[in-house]
Length: 165
Ligand SMILES: [Zn+2]
Image 1: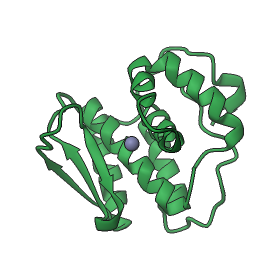
Image 2 (image 1 turned 180 degrees about the vertical axis):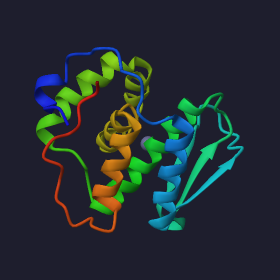
Image 3 (image 1 turned 120 degrees about the horizontal axis):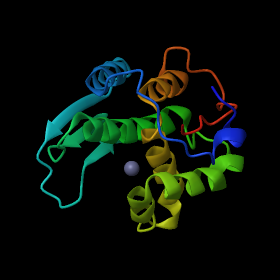
């Protein structure tokens, strides 16, 4: 894992992904199931809605609006991040990194950044974490999930928030 601070703002193109997205979706869905979370696909019927996590029923819904596996992965990784926040009992990133994460997201995924602005202030941090995490390479997302929701989830906050490559 590269040093977050050093690499955060060096926005080089992402290298070929180690994990194929369909395979990553399967792995993350299995991890979620082992953690008691069901993943369903359905027509959500709400414009712009791509997915949701419903903590009280332990369900993640992936809306049938995606046209490719990368988009499905992005939604699943986003909602899985909300699950990680529940496992952790709060934010999963170090407050010292939030400003840099926001700047990186604005650069790397401007649409995600813009839609973030429409959230109420109290939800913005959890949304920033979810959007940032969904941009990470799939193997890093799965590693974060294991860290926060895995069987050995006693680990504290990650020392370093992984950097976007
Ligand atoms: Zn969200």
